[in-house]
Length: 264
Picture 1: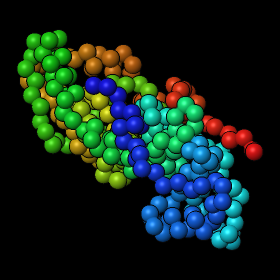
Picture 2: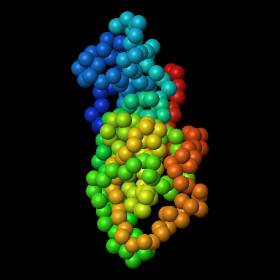
Picture 3: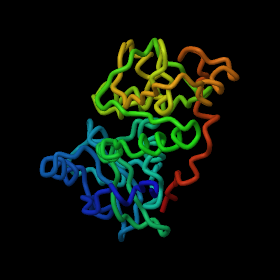
C-alpha cells in the first residue's frame, strides 16, 4: 500500500488573509466567520506569512496585517508523508501547516485534526493477516487471531531496541485522546511478544496505563519465534530496556521546509 501523503488529507478550500491592505479587523472577522484560530497570509497566491489569534493581542483593529504576521514559516509539500507532517506538528506545537507548491503558492492546509483522521483510518487488521501468513510459511503452524483483545503492559516482551522521542510524544497524545491504533502481539506462555506498536506500548507505560487494545495472534504449537530470539540477542525483557532516541538522531525529515520570507 502506498504511503499516505499530505495531499490525501489536506483541506483545499483555504481561508487566507491578503497581505496587501489586510488588517487586524479582517483577521477578527475571519475568526468569527470560520471559528478557525489562524490563517496563512498571501500575496498574489504566494504564502508570505501566517497570522493567529494570539497575534491580535493589544493591537488596534486597523493595524496592517504585515505588522502582525509571522514571517518565519514552517510549511508542507503535498507529497510529504503524512507521518512526517504529524511529527512536525507535534514537535513544533503548530496546529496547522500551509501546503505550498514549488513556487510557494498556497494550495491547501494540513491541520492536527487532519493528521489524527489519517491515523484513525490507518487502523486495519490487514498487516495482522500478512504476519499470520508469514508465520504459516516459516513455522508450518496455523495461527489464529483474537479481535478486540487487551494485553497487560507489564507482560509485553519487546522486540525492538530503539524508538524515537518525537513519535513517542505523538503516541502519548493519541492514547490520551482515545485514538491509538491497537498493538499486534503473539501470545506466548506468560507473556505477549510485541510485533508492532513499540512506541504505543512505551507511551502507555509512561502514562501509567496498565492495558492496551491489541490484535492477539495465538499459536498452539510449542515453538520459539524468531522475534523471541531477536529479543534475547538484544537483551530485551521489558519495555524499560528500549532506548529512546532524541529528535536530533531521528532520520532527517527531508520533506520539511523552513522558509524565511525575505523582507520586501
